[in-house]
Each structure stands twice: as structure tokens, then as C-alpha cells.
Length: 310
Image 1: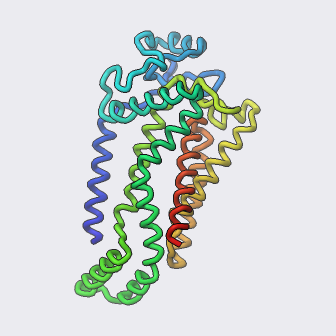
Image 2: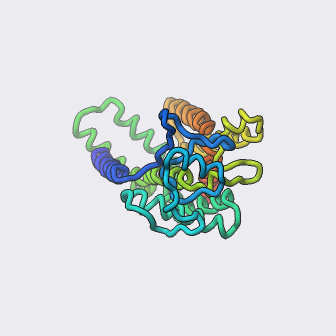
Image 3: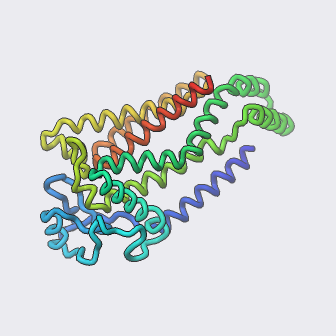
């Protein structure tokens, strides 16, 4: 059982490595001294390989000054779903179509912050069959946990091959009884990785995003830059990222565990929350909005599944 799961996991990881090895990626614009070129208004390090032309004169001058020809690029509103030079499977299949969708929704609602929210929700609705299954697996595991703990106690001091085979057979029986597939519970976690990076790259390469604002927040500005300019509302972004991350992790680890396992999971949840909280200081507001909506969707979905299973 464990060997089979390991082989499946290995295949998935190899697939992602192959995909990422064929990607184009965001390139930071640097000046003649090798320093990142920043927009003075937003504090954002500009992207060299943008997908469309910026509108702000200050931004255009920065590209011209650093000898980046943007004259051949389309206007953001005139982008095609697939356009420009081939940059690898990743950019062609994921990043550019996603960027196109964000632009189309932004133009429809005349607000790119709202476009990020709607696009995130659309992606979550499309992937809901996977996410719902993962949440159901977590609840099924919670119900199976007492039997799994009894199984561990039963074979605690038995290490011979026959006992291990018998243990695995009984474990398979428990998994079958509660309809548990260990691999499906981690499938969406792996799926989230390319989705996040596709979103991250699409927004960093769209001037229409980092030149726009949503409510009182500039989409291209990081909380660090906002706070350094005296805009203390950016604290709200940090708090929301931390809160939604914490409760999302906590709900995903809601299965019954032994005392030692619970302590380890609590430590991991706290560590990941702190890590993401620190990372949120240097993420653009646009990316932070994606993370908040994505995590918020996970929280609401898991609560809904728990209520149905209760």
C-alpha cells in the first residue's frame, strides 16, 4: 500500500518537474547596475517580459530608459488568448490564457481587483469536484481514525513480515469500509501549486493589474511599501492573509489524531501560518487578494462538508 502510494506520488512529482522545466517565467527588469527597477508610486519591481503595454507614462518611460522594446506588445485590452512568441508549455497553456481571462473579466466589470476575485472563484468552482472529494476524504478519515488507532495498538510490537502484511490487509479493509483513498486527499494540494504560480506569473506580467487599484488598495503595491508610505490600511491585507491561512490549515487537519500527532499538526499549522504571514509582507496586493479568496473558499467548503457529514 505504502509503496504503491509512493510510486503514484513520485509520478505526480515527476510530471510537475517536467512541466516547470518547460516554462517561461517572470523576469525582473534591471537597470545598468543590475538593480531591480521599481515603480516609484507603487514600489513594485517591474517585470521585464510583460504581456501587454502599460498605460502610465511613468512606467512606459522606465521601460524605454532600460532599453525594453514594448512597441510590439498589444494593449492589454486587445490581448488574444494565445499570442506572441512561444515561451514553453507552461506559459502558453496556463499563464497567457489565465491572463486573458483576467483582462476580459476586468474589462467587463471595469475593475481588475474584482476580476481577480471572480477569476479565483471560477477556478475554485471548476476544481470543486477535486476539492470536495479531498474534504470528504478528511471527514471519512476522521470517522475511521478510532479503528486505525486500534489497528496500530494491535500490531504495536509486531514487526515480522507476516504481521506487517496482515496489518496492511486490515488497513485496506478499513479504507474500503470508509471509502478512503489516501492519494486523493493530497491531489488538490499538489494541484494548488501550479495554480498559484500561474496566477502569480499572470498578474506580475499584466501592467493592467499592477497599475490598477481596488477599494483603497493599489494592486501592485506590497504591504511593506504601503505601510512605509503611511498607508496603514495595508495591515488589513496582512491580517486577512494570516487569518484565512490559519483557519484553512486548521480545518484541513481536522481529523482525529493521537496526542502526539495533534501536537505535530498544531506546530506545522502555526509554522505555515507564520511563514505565509511573513511572505505576505512582500506579495503584491493582487496576489494577496487571490490568496484570501482562495483560502476563504476552502474554509466555507470544508465547513459545508462537515455540516453535511455531521
